[in-house]
Image (cartoon, one colour):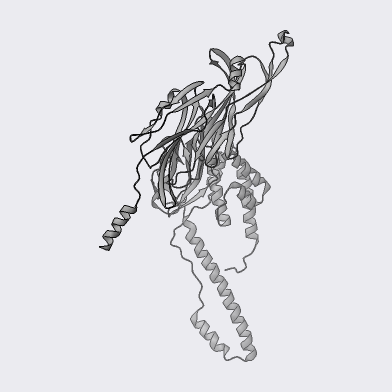
Length: 546
């Protein structure tokens, strides 16, 4: 009975929400032509239905809407609201009416908007020899979402010289794309020459930003100076573009992993040599390429790869690049690695999955590489794995006999024998340690071993990628673990000629403008280095010869 009364009390005390009011506001009225205004519509409830904003398209250029919902509790009373924000730019001067919006039979009020010509626009209509326009392909963005800013100079006559101010706003990363382009356009029946400069704009944090219009300062020939064109004087001219207001939203909370927003993201892979079968201990090259549209190269994340049991990966430093194609920024990040299988049988490389946010659909997508199954064949050049190391043992009978003899000697002899016995134990301990190390070395023979013949073939065939693979395997065998790069390997070897050849090999692998690589010099330097290392090893006698 108490529970029933408690439930009834909670039901009666809980607030009942219902949509009762729609409020609409405009942050600027009157509005200057070329200026951006923010239209906000607020409902006093959480609603899923969106108003029809298409009625604005007749008189305005519209960006948005962006929707937000919030709940507030003030003095014990809760309230919920849903809001929509849009950016409006009038298409022409005049007086217009923004009609009422309606949701669930609740309507907002209409707004009468006056759009006035600005002084700069009026001056352009009288003397339109020069004017500047700025445009952004989208003014409602997510943080780290790339947008394209275009600044276009329109002019008639002879523009002798000019300088255009660079856009700069704290919290916005802005970088010019490509070179300025020149063309012609018709404006109100008049032909203008144009210079266009494009930027990529990336917001680094959420919030509202105002991007000031670019300003052009220069000199033009004064055709009205009353002199012949050859002696015509120049006059100072200047023009400014319109400001742009940008609304930046935070990353969606439901997004998994590192934030990546793009128009399109894809993963692809190549194997060299192209094969479904591997040979135990023989390296092959796997190259994974991450490609994204409307993303800068520094925004591309690393691709996380699982390393299954039975293989070793020798990863190279990822290489990123970007280029503009038909007005779209295309970025790529290439992950190259040598794959070495340590045991025979079937090898399964798991699926590669990278989340990204589709800016067009506002949903999470995944770029994937499917699971790959490979067959690993045995390598007859590798020794068998069933070797065991023999650890020397002290014969039990001899030890017992020595102990009996020790007790029969005098005090001095006992002391000398004790010292001799300690040296024997120390010697046997060292030999045992050498045997254990030898055992560990035999167990590792199933992995890839440096093959000088194959390194020689790669150098003579000028195969830079294969030469790098065998050099990394040789380095791991000599130093105990593989270096992270050829530069690190050159620091280990401390040979100037060898380091110079490694630098040339590195340039061939990673420079954009690759030239023909000649590997014979690298083979000669490596052979001398290996010969010197072998001679040093044979000259030093073993401390405890067997």
